[in-house]
Length: 376
Image (tube, rainbow, N blue to C red; front, side, top):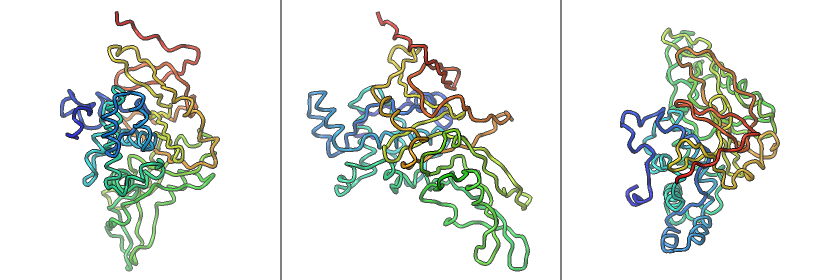
C-alpha cells in the first residue's frame, strides 16, 4: 500500500496492537456498515487521467466509467464482515485485499476511489484482465480465484471435521481423517426453491463410503455458512436455521449436536448489491460519522436508498442471491435468542443509537433525524 500512502487511512491506527485482532471492538461500528462511501473506482488504467484532471465533476466521471463500482463496493463490505466475524487472514491472498477492507471510507471521495482501485488491480493484475473489469457483476466476483481462496476455501469455512471415525472392512470403529478434497470447497452450497435450508445442510452429514470404509462425515459447525438460492421466499423463512449432525468428540464416538445460524448478509448477485444484518437479523443501515460531530449519529444516504429499496428477496423469484449465515455463539452461557422478526428485510432511513460496543437500531418512522450540531 506504500504507493497510495497519501490516500490510504487505516481504521486501526491508534489502536493498541493487542486490540487490532477480531472481534475488533474499538472500530466495529465503522466496519459494520453497508456502503458509506462513494461508488467510483480508479484502477491503474485510469489513475493518470484521474490524477491530472482538476475538475471534480470530471474526476467523478472518470472514476465511475471503467469499473463496476457497485460490485467492488459490495465485495469490500463482504470482506469487512468476514473480518468482524473473526476469520483470520489466509496465506497466499494478496495483502491488499485485507488492507482495503480496513480503509477509513467516507472521508475523502478521491482517496476512496484510488484505494478501491487497488482491489480492482489485485483482482485483475494483467493488462489482458482490464476488459473484465468493465461489466463484472458481484456474482462473477464471488467466483474469482482470489475470492474463493479468501472466502469459500477458508479453513474456518470447512463444513466437515477433518478428524472423525470409520468402520473398516472388519467392522471395527477406528479414527479416520478426511483428506483435503473433502475439506476445501470452491463455492457456497446451492439450495433449491422451497427447500428447507437446515434440513438440506444437515443431510450433508452422516455415513458415506470412502475407499471401502464407512466414514462418518461429522459436523464442523463452521462460524459461517454461505448459501446460494433464488429469491421468492418470505424473508422470515430465511432468517435462521438449525444445523444438526454427528459431532466427533474425544471419546471417539460421534454424538448428535445442533447449532443455530442467523442471517448476516444478503447479496443480490445480478444487481451487485449487499445488505447486512446484526446478529439478531435486524437490518444494518447505511451510516457515516460526521467529522467533529461524533454524537450526532447523522444518517447519510446519498441517493442510495431509492436504488436499494427497488428489490427485495421475497419479491425476486427470478434473481439469484448469496445468503450468509453466522453460527450463534454462546457467550457466558446466555440462553439462545430467536431472530428478531419485528423488522423487515430493508429499513428506510431511521434513527439509531450507540450503546456500549454494540449498535442497536430502533425503528422510529415518525421521528426525523436530528439536525447536525452547529460548529460555531
